[in-house]
Image 1 (cartoon, rainbow, N blue to C red):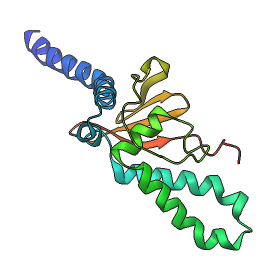
Image 2: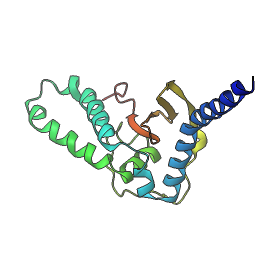
Image 3: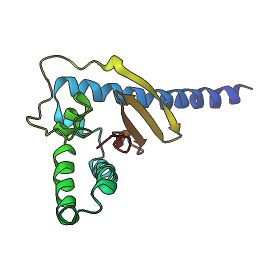
Length: 168
């Protein structure tokens, strides 16, 4: 019986730590965003996966409306790449999180700055929960931050901006 307790107790604490870890990671990300620490923001984001996600969303957003335009076929991918390159940076992620409608309305990221003079209101988080054993999602003001457990921690691997539902 003692052996079972010695095995069960560490297992319980490991599961508890794992269950709390994405919330802690999200808290650290918000702390990095508030302080303007781009290195800390970078440590919480898988930029290659975020680039792919943003590019896919932008292509889907404009595909139906621009399919018949020849200029879009030539120029569209270049414009989308430029937009994705601007936003798939620590400062761009901070700009998207501080202004969720920036890409929905195709606003330009004029001056990427972390702080706009006032701290971000993170109480607007609608929900935060596990969607699988290695995936976690946080929704805030229409943006879904999708985290993935990589073995060394939780990284944002997808920013779902809801561009498919956006009107053009």
